[in-house]
Length: 212
Image (cartoon, rainbow, N blue to C red):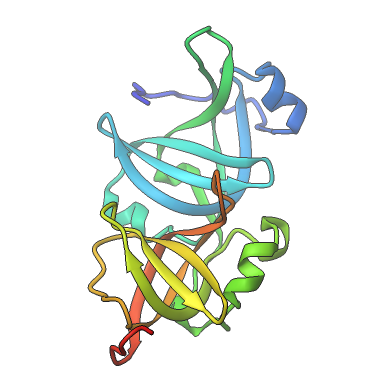
């Protein structure tokens, strides 16, 4: 994801990306525009990378200049990004997705601010989380509550609500123990095997109780 300084031609109007463009890769090196929700911020080869969930799936936006603290404030915001489209090739040099490259965070326009407190939202029953699709749940954080039933070595946490349980991947270290009643606010992800919450914030709301 290393980028020198892609300077789009200001005389060109950015193109909105459609599913045909994604599959063909014909917009490679073109100026494009995407809209979606920032779900993750990470560093990759000295550049900021924003994971933006769009109607066409998750798109990595590589930013040449900016700080992690600035970018972190964009998590769960609705954004419009103007940048240069770049095809991501696989080992057979076939298109394996795409990225959007922009010089700075000024190329990321906030069109909907994230909530001040993600825990203010009404909780979604875990049973619904396991059966609904992203189209119904949306791309913003959703909140669940339940009891911690297990901790994995990978750092993920299993939360049970009634008869349904879901895997929660915290955005950072979480000080919880089995039996704790918690609230988790994270991003819905279909996952390979089962739905889960990623980039989740957690807080303990009840005293630890023995599991039966």
